[in-house]
Image 1 (tube, rainbow, N blue to C red):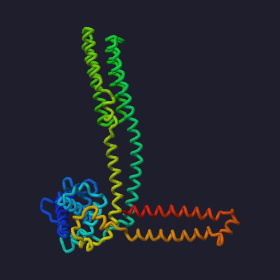
Image 2: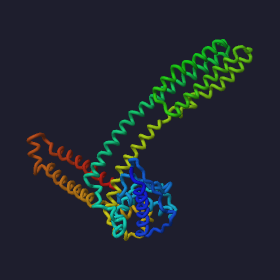
Image 3: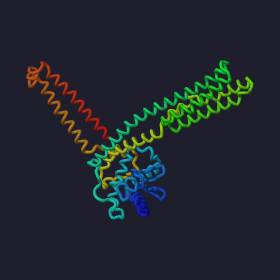
Image 4: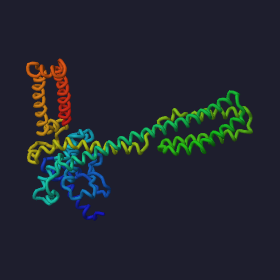
Length: 401
């Protein structure tokens, strides 16, 4: 458990990080722009929520300057959006994470000579470091496992929903058919009361326990309880008319026919097919894992720029998403080297293709030793492989954007 004074100091420092970033980048702020800060004991990632202008920082990250300034940078970006009448919720995800990462870069510069300079101990781990790569690999493995389990669980939930619907449909058809048969004069009132009572009893003692084993969702349970209540109401109503006149019995049956239509399964299909809370939680976890991996691209772009370069940009936090992308999202040198490799591969491949397909150089030897014309087939095969290889490299290059 972290001491209260330590938490209060962390809150103060995070707010000071916000002030420092605003001051150094020229964003005009007032006291109402300062974000709320919550220090939590649970193991969560640091985050900023623009809807209530709040930074959430786990106790495990107290004293981590990179985390402080990343979230303060998100908050400052939201304030700049507000002043520009832009919704912070429309922000491009990659641009948003870019601004978070440059907050960390700027923090290492703007804290020099201040009370916050102790927050940065040693160099910041690069997004291309082995630790980050292993983290991404582990996250991808976890996401794949969760997706696989989610698909299997969703199949079970669909099966359960189908079974529940079939049971409810059977009960509805049974009761409504009996009421209709009596109304047509094909069944005695005594038989109707007995059959309705039997159906209600079977539903409660046999069907409901089976349905409960299918782990029904909240809306499914509510629908089942509604069916049970309507069946018992119909049964009790018919019971009270046992000694009434045939005309009165016929009238109450017709009234019951109108009431029982309220449990027509087609009216409750949406509730029966509702996704479980667990299913929603699983999807949220998967989305979080995907977002975690998608931090890599904007972080790579952010790490190309030094604090000095960023501080020379006019209205850094006022840039629109499109302006920020056009200004900062350029191909890293490493990626350009990959493209150079692809060009060399293409050039070398064309030379090899010429040598293989030219009968004056190798064609005659290959054809005579193996099969007539094979030189041309080898050339065509290699050419197709070359095109596929270049296409794959081009796709990877485009994904940098």
